[in-house]
Image 1 (tube, rainbow, N blue to C red):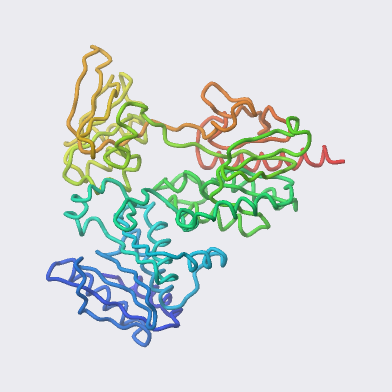
Image 2 (cartoon, rainbow, N blue to C red):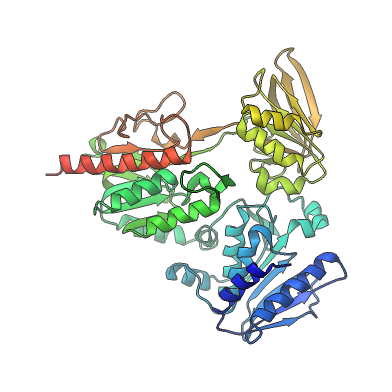
Length: 520
């Protein structure tokens, strides 16, 4: 189950366990139960003085196991094997149950502990999902910290019948007390904020009370992180407000072209960005969505950024690095069947469509890569490309053409997502060469048609291009004095991580230059 190297690493981690706990397994005669027994036996043997294993559990979900600290009423259960991307989640759960403190702000820990009510969470994940661990780890920690919170982590591949019955078509999918609570990547603070209705008001008051920054960065992806590091190194008061630290990098699987790093994965890279930023004196304000920008000329003083919760942050200079988001098809049925057959991450949700027929919308590199990945999982993939020819690199098209269960339809204009009211059943499209309307039966549709800049909130505040990108010069300056921008939300060509990081550094240096030239 675990090789010798992994066992050695795990044994080192388990040395941090200080409080005794038991693992209680509910098993049957299947292969997955056998593997679970082997995994748990190995874990117990590595820290037998603190960890006890029982195999007399009677939970209805088999195989599954609970982690139970001695003398505690906490309730955390793993149904299926938490391996793959979720092995880290298992290790952290073992450490936290065993008394090792989590690397979470103390006020957030106290907020979790003070939640009052009966919260029964079920989170469905897949072992190939790189968005799932954050949600799994957040809900696991909540169950360990607060006995009123119960969390069950369910590996979809081990419970396919249950996944089908509940029509889980995207992961992570979270249920609270039997009802859908949320889908997709969520952080601990975000989950807690949804449960603690007074949290937004308290957070807004804290933000309002902050002193003005020398430079305020809006956005926490590669551009924002680089800008924060470069600004903080100048010794100026630096703030970073981000809707999600790491930005869209969190949704990227393999990164093989960031110079000096041969290979990494998006979530790991995003975590490294955050660690680097926090190495410096940067006031990091996560899970904060910007609502409006008011340039200094408009308010007669400092630049103001209004947040969704009503708070207003003030600064002498601002760097906009809000990145981009997946482009939608904007056809009937897309919104209705989002997470019910309409998906955007083939790595996360692909395993849920095993043995089914799916479509990929888009013939660029991302679309063809998605189709290649899906072809190894599903029965059949149809790639729909709007233009008369695909735009993907030749090497990718050659690989795609070699796959026997892939079909490419060119000159195809998607017109509607079809469904039965609860899930996707097909796709309607028009043949642009003949104007003929056609339909194809499908279980899933993966949208891969590019990006849109996150700049809707900036209309009228700074100049935007016809594509909605922030217009900047070579130094990252926007049309508003003291307001700079960097990364995928701007007119910079080639939307790449390395380019965004460089642009963030440029914007920070330009903001510093602006400060020293305009200060009294």
